Length: 335
Figure 1 (cartoon, rainbow, N blue to C red):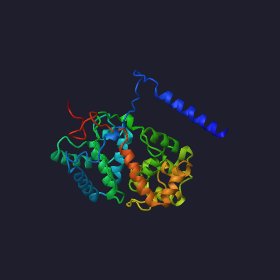
Figure 2 (spheres, rainbow, N blue to C red):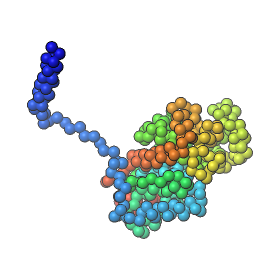
Figure 3 (cartoon, rainbow, N blue to C red):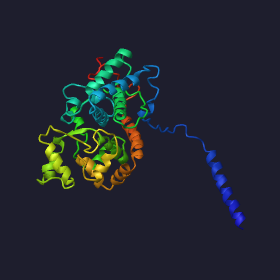
């Protein structure tokens, strides 16, 4: 009896499959077209024949500038982030005119523009109108990481430069006082996740910040007229001594400010994170596990930094006939 039921079930299944197979195809049915991610059009060999020395020139120039001023390493990484955070990685942050992102108050402490201009000038001599400013900035951020002691990764190329840059749009870039929810939501709008947020924040293992960005933590946190209670007391006293003026500079990593390492994360465990946005990564349950993992596993941080920086460099890129290749990174080409 059981065998008969089994055979009957198989027969019914085969009948349905055969019935479905002979149904006429609706020729008028609309085909679903899945849009391609523009980043898929980037290529590791994009300049292999067009400008084979492009990466070498970028690397040499970045190295020379950082050798003269080590702080430019962090500045180039930050410049790349600010670029990708607004309209994607299209070099819109480099456009230099009234009303551009670069003219915004949020962008007033950005540095490294002269490095990009120097690289672009050399590339225009070797390969005119070939290498985009967006690709230069992306590769420069990678090379800055390497010269600071961080990991190397392959950068796919083929980004085009944008023609639009608006100061008001730059205001969306995190400024160091947002809560974790706001940070997560901002990263999600760029196609980045919580792990990317925690990992890219690790770039604060090098670099400096103006005291103006943290004075509220020292004297009037959230309008309480008291310091931020999450600040280590000794660190608070140190910052008060170093921040006499809002324009004074302090290191983001007080322990090893010139070394690309995971001390940034252990600093958060010790309540010596400089920015509110950094310290809150350790107090929020959504980001805490990643902070603890990075703090205890340097190898994990190095490898994930490669992944997250690649993800960042692929945000809303322009490819193909979109955008242009600027002759000068400061200005849109004349038509």
